[in-house]
Image (cartoon, rainbow, N blue to C red; front, side, top):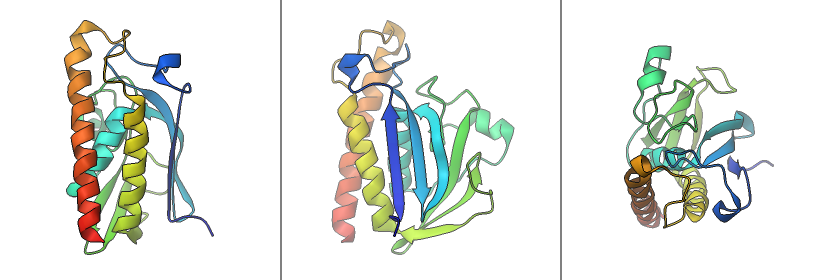
Length: 182
């Protein structure tokens, strides 16, 4: 039987020290695959891993509403997955869906530019979803060096550090929320 949630990424190399692909704005690029109840939602989509981890963690603590149009996709401030071109979304390449907590479950719907029809609705135990999201974020955080990679331009170093710090804080908050849910 397939796991309820599978969320995996493949960064372009083994570690940041071995030349992970970093944009000059501090984005760690990678390919993400997401399966829910055996259904492929994302299939090796190229996204910014640090920004996606942040958005997914945010969706554990508050409901997330997916983008609903091309115009909205271009300027959506924090879709769940977006291009690896920037720490902030302004590229229009968005893979998104709504995440709504309902008691001990999470309901995922309104899929935008995913492998399933937009009207698909998937209900999962919140704790199963949260465990996979926090594991994903933890693995991404391990790839983000405390010292800003040299390729990151001076203009973006502050944003990179702020993103890394926010990811660390949200990961701690998510773990605490999970402990309180058990």
